[in-house]
Amino acid sequence: MPETAKAAQDIDLSFTAEITADSNSGWACVVVPSSGEYFGTKRAVKVGGTVDGHPFQATMLPIGGGNHMLPLRAALRKAVGKDKGEEVTVKLDQRFG
Image 1 (tube, rainbow, N blue to C red):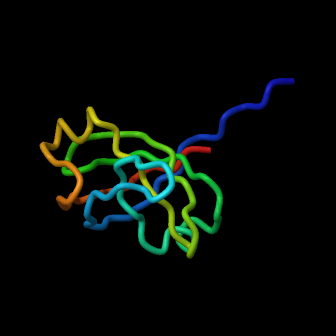
Image 2: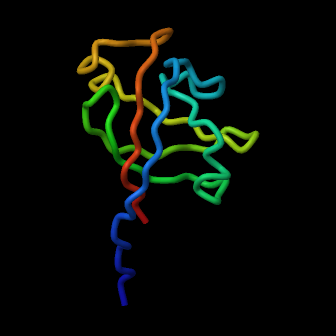
């Protein structure tokens, strides 16, 4: 029998962070502070929300120290007009799975 997808869970986490390059992948991302504690896991977490008011969905990846990195695709960075070295306001309002 196929596994059924879990419904999205409403969450409320907002923060401001600088767009940086992940030390392993080089991807443009923001570090989500205390995310391991907030989400109760050190594994990947699928989330949705807004960056500077622009909607997105992404998978946060664990980077150690109880934190996750949230990759920001080029199209999203272009939409908000910001790139590495600049700050963005992130609002996470949904967790998937």
